[in-house]
Image (cartoon, rainbow, N blue to C red; front, side, top):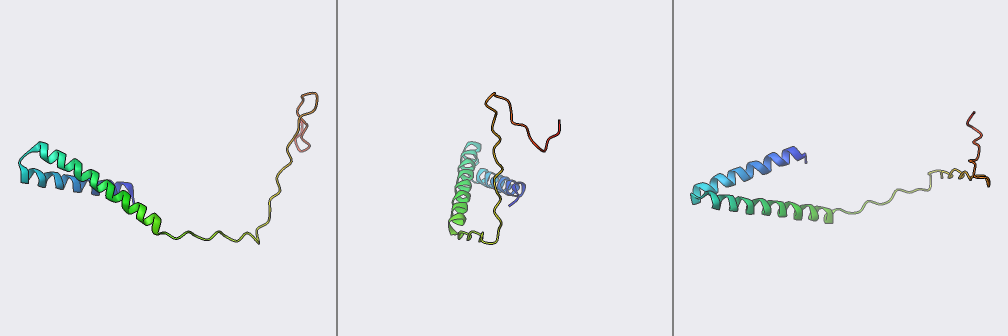
Length: 93
């Protein structure tokens, strides 16, 4: 889900809840506290839903590697005993 779409919906729900809570209780402080509780409950529900979806998903089988060619590792260049770097054959000086 797109984050901006989620954020718009989340803020819209909280604003509607805050207005309804204020109209019912006629108290700004009560409406504010109840809206914070509503926000925490929505986030907890979203977290549980994501955990449920992850748990429900079946693991995908690993692709077969029988037909893929192996890539040989390049040899490591060693320094000379004198402390100089080894010369590279493909690099011109």
